[in-house]
Length: 112
Image 1 (cartoon, rainbow, N blue to C red):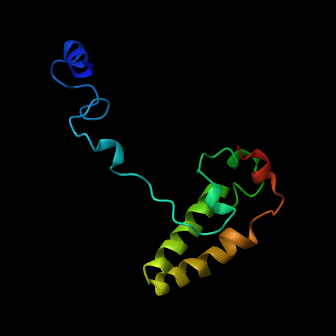
Image 2: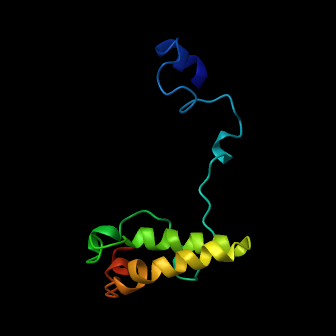
């Protein structure tokens, strides 16, 4: 029914082709962002970004969300055995993720 309605308004399929209404019955399962386990607290994050405006070190280096994404990537690399790249990320993360964090917990107070 939805395809018929869309075809009435967009017979040439110019508006969001394959995005809103799709023939692929598995489209809702494809291209999902993985959230590898990394830390009991961090794993609860859905990366919504509510924490970013409250972070005082947000403009200095990394946002809270970027810190979480990097932690997850390090965990993912370690889980697949890519310890060399994981070590490089950890070394780079030391300043941008650890040393520049204000450790004020404002991010956790804004977290839904």
